[in-house]
Image (cartoon, rainbow, N blue to C red; front, side, top):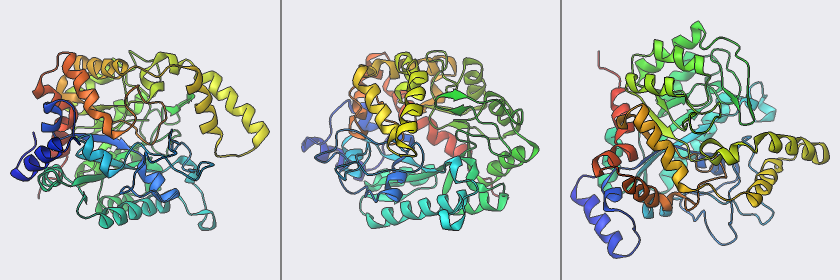
Amino acid sequence: MRIGSVALALAVAAAQAGAVEGPAAHHAAIVVDGHIDVPSAMLDVGFDIGEKGDRAGCTDVIAAYSGSLPRRDDGNYCTHFDLDRARSGGLDAAFFSIYVAADYVGKTAAEGGGPARRAFDMIATVKAQVAAHPDRAMLATSAGDVRRAVEEGRFAVLMGIEGGYAIEDSLALLRAFHAEGVRYMTLTHTKHTDWADSSGGLYGPIAGAHGGLTDFGREVVREMNRLGMMVDISHVADDTVRDVLATTTRPVIASHSSARALTDHHRNINDELLRAIGANGGVVMVNYYGDFIDPAFNATLPGRYQRMAELGAKLGDDPRIDWMVEEETRARLPRTPLSALVDHIDHIAKVAGVDHVGLGSDFDGAPFMPAGLDGVQDLPKLSAALLARGYSDADLAKILGGNVLRVMEANQPVAP
């Protein structure tokens, strides 16, 4: 629950001004998102989180699929997140994704540098923007920091690396990222690292290379445990999840994954592993992306992949191809209903336990969001839907942020 007179006064003032709508239980809770990709827009196109991401001319979002974010023809970049909308939607904290695509592996300095350089550049950009808005945002590295930010009426910016390529097979680099404030690492993205198997890309799974984790991969997990950096098993293969759970001594997270039993996509988590994550004490933070929660969108993936190949043959290496295909798909399919997202949260709560589910939107990393969720400002609608489904205020507080704060605390390093 929110604490302190400052937070209470801010909530009352916002409500009186008409800026805050939705269930009281939503605004009473500490709301944490496990995965927002806005740093890609911050670094690549100069988006300022203090500006309006839904300004005039913004009707859709270009997702950060490749790490290369083109400006739209009208020059605008349209986001799901900005600081003003976070406040109006009652979002208190988010893990900003330090997203490192596998494509950065092997890049030279002339090409912009490799994975570690990409991650350090993005971290520097995040820190610079937080410093530019000291009255509205603060960098957070612990659950205590998140609670302090809420008390002070500031947005808590957390950081998680997406793509273990960033450490370039070096525990020293892993330690350096922790020192920079990174508090989770997704072990892979769409391709294998040299030490962990990925589940594959959006359009299909890939065959394993290591059978899960290598011996060095287990060293990575153990060092993350020692440092107090959460192990994120979104994007990894099922065998990798099993090896992580057999190795870790701390609860894990899936920062943005949904339920495979409801939408049969390899990026989602099956019931066997949901139960195992619950037994580990971890938390699965549900992804809002239509392809992962809506079987109708998921069914379009083979056709979309073929369409991308057709456009690639005509247009070459045009970074707008992803966006063009997504727009064509969105034009012919109705938006995913909000109830589909609630179904995934509900399923994970029933299989893993209500103490083991959270929110990991993939805002600004995916274009197909459920109807009514056009950005962080709309989060009270999700809380209202969960309450209507029968969740108590106490359980809602767990789902919105309490569960991941508990896992963060459980990952704090133990003093020698």
